[in-house]
Image 1 (cartoon, rainbow, N blue to C red):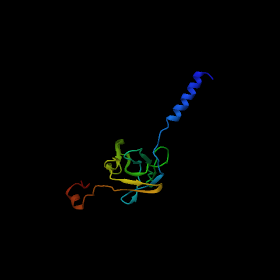
Image 2: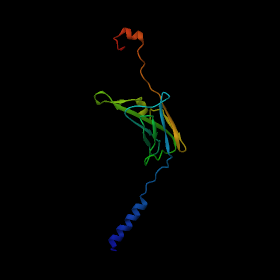
Image 3: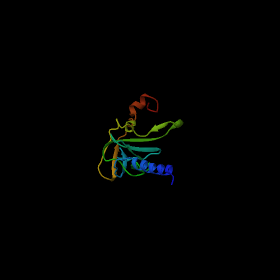
Image 4: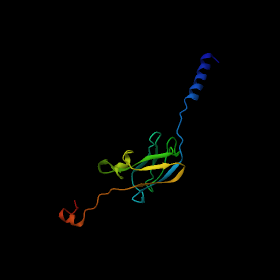
Length: 152
């Protein structure tokens, strides 16, 4: 073997051995999202994200039929870094004219405003995330009489 080939081989071994990334430990985590006490169901796209303060975040696709999810940090379904972390939930669909409509309050999309926290210590398949909707109140019948038939 030529000196150049030998040097190239040894260098590649050293580089591959010394460049391994250190990954945070994760625990398998899955669960279900509820809104106003009922399983979250929707037509559109939904994502949950768990955002550690000092580590790798985990994401999961929300099943639109029942609100279930499995979290992924590095590889599909591996879980989340243990600890207490903010949670973000984004659920949207396309509305008239192709505009994106948020189906849950927008504050749930921002880790600094979400108000949702989870503590993950060990593997779980029953993490429960509770959302509250903030739907506008329907106009009262008295208000409806003061305006047009739409009540607005």
